[in-house]
Length: 174
Length: 271
Image (tube, rainbow over all chains, first blue to last red; front, side, top):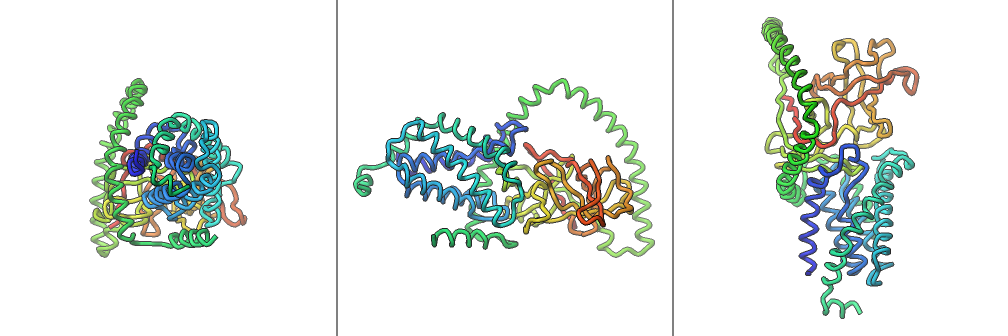
């Protein structure tokens, strides 16, 4: 599978995220469970490809999200997703991580993402949620939700990203 | 480190009040909106179908209630027609200007929701009306139940709606809505400025101490600012207490509209 195939899949998932998946969340869970499949892709690309791809994918899809759902700020998600992709790539890239490491990475990415977003909106004075409330309301449920999705999508995502590394590209990296 | 500084600076730049979007932004927003539209609506139809199947029993009760409301409406319509005629006649007699006559003449534009971001810090509802259809920023968006929010970004064919949950008196990018109580339009006044995420209530501030506003009143927008239309249902008063500085009162208001899983909304155009 080539990288641009994966990007196409990501685009489709991006569209589904705000539409079909939003409707699959029950009424009481809206605002508690937030589907963030782009983050999942970014984490897997950091684990099974390299940090450069992860940073670029994170930046690109973060920016797309920011533009499409533009309310007050552009670039929050672009910044946090690129940062998470880079950090995780720095630590774990091409380490042949197994399922457990992948789940932990996704959970860490989820909490990093929520926390840095929370902090950035706080810096710009657009957010006055108490931190303790936010943790209970959506930080924690999201870790669980994101991890469950990591388990479900582990096999295909790993296969896609590992097979996307071409031979010549691999030589470049070594 | 440099990347970090540039990033935060860039984010800050995007915060200022922007009336028009740049070309790449609007191209992306339009093309994404078109695709989202094809996904959101089937998804909503399917989900609603199953929900409706489950609620079949409630439909009978609802139907009976609606019939009663329809009868009341038919009665009121005759009265309304007479009062409307009388009002027009009086306005003519008192030499109202054209602008004053059209002040409360609103146009309800129906819009379909195309996508929703339920990010807790940046919730956005995207609708399929844009500047092409005469949408401008800060127009009120309502459902049949009541206020949903304000139009925050307008694009050519789509626009983003800021839900009322984002109203925040301490925020730099928030708005305030002047409001009054239904049936006491000339005596009650307050400003809706804040939404408390934890309790789920809106707060109406700057209420006069001897204002007759009481628990259970329906709060509607007063239209005194002439930007925001008059008579939009916002919610019901739950409690009233002395405000932060002791000079004015603050009321807690339970919002009337449910923001979860919207399909159709109305944008109110003030002429």
